[in-house]
Image: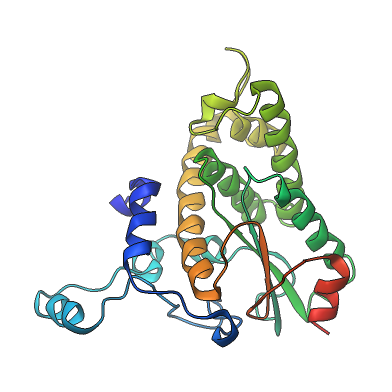
Length: 260
């Protein structure tokens, strides 16, 4: 496994901060991160000027998600997980969440309300997730696993994951969830990802493999979330971006209207 996936989240965040400025939201285009339509994506880590020349002379290449994650069987579903609709649908709704932000629940509820009224051939909902609480990456990764391996269960699994997170938070009185055991209340309680796997019918023999996948997939998605945030000028999560435009106050009605 490439070292990229095990790099500390803080180091990745610092790299993103040092690598140029984000594109202004009004100039950003929808579908820019869609791997079903493009082979390359906006990359804030791409060096310019003398740095680019130096890298070329050294025989190196810019860091990119295509190079880092392209070896993975389901990399497209990890960098661009479509929870609803056709991946090539003309309209795009990016829902960017943070498990640790209570506001995520209302934003996700608005997106779900819109999903019930949208035509899947015309609009798609894509999940991006990031958080300062690192166990959120594993939880997102489990949602991605379900979205790929339990068809139609991606959105439902996200519902469960957010509810499980809130329930564990209440028990732990707001403690930050950095590792899987930060969220458990007793020695016999399973970490949330393992609870989710049992719910999804994963056999005990496969649990460790799926847990590793969840960690890795969640980190892939986190990296691309950082890129998308910068490109679209998203200042904080949660957020909804419809066809390249960041919504001020996302509601089901506003989302549906934005794609009509």
